[in-house]
Amino acid sequence: MIKQKGLLIVMSGPSGVGKGTVCKEYLSQNDNIAFSVSVTTRAPRPGETDGVEYFFRTEEEFINMRDNNGFLEHAYVHGKYYGTPRDVIEKRCAQGLDTLLDIDVQGALQVKKAMPDAVLVFLLPPSMQELEHRLRSRGTESEENVLIRLGNAVKELSFAKDYDYLIVNDTVKDSVERLSAIITAEHCRADKCEITK
Ligand code: 5GP
Image 1 (cartoon, rainbow, N blue to C red):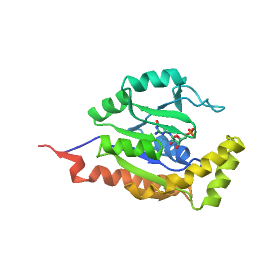
Image 2: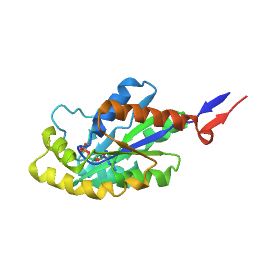
Image 3: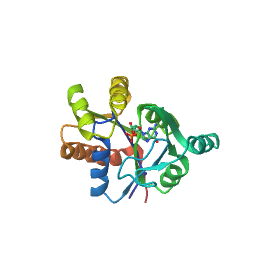
């Protein structure tokens, strides 16, 4: 009776808020959605694998891909380039499959412009103090990078009002439940379903 369209779920939020953890947990509980692996010029962190968390590329390779219209969106974030490969997204949308993107606010707004049906979800920290604590206790960034990321967080939070949904990340469990509820509701929207015979 009903054919559901594939959703593009775009998750943003300041560095350290826990986007990666919430996305990973949601993906581990749901088989029918794939994570969009971005291209970046930043160095891999310990434990990160090329093609899993990111495609790690040189600046020259990134610019070459950008100039060949290879990105659905791209941005310069915390001093490095990041971009969403266009071909994967277009293929999955055409097949009616859901895709989850973890990208920054500049990228999310580019996606919304190119694909107005995209669902934008912003993950907020319970407080700025808690964000600073999470960022420092993660232990992956230098002091200089922590300060850059905290400065960027203030700017990013001012874009939260442009998103479709807000989730305060108190606990991973609650955030995953809320994300799940949003995706379920979006699938039930009449304008995102095709009524068949
Ligand atoms: P990290 O270096 O901590 O993995 O990510 C830094 C920031 O870049 C995060 O806010 C993340 O959401 C964002 N990001 C990751 N991939 C992309 C992408 O493809 N495009 C954009 N615009 N931002 C991205």
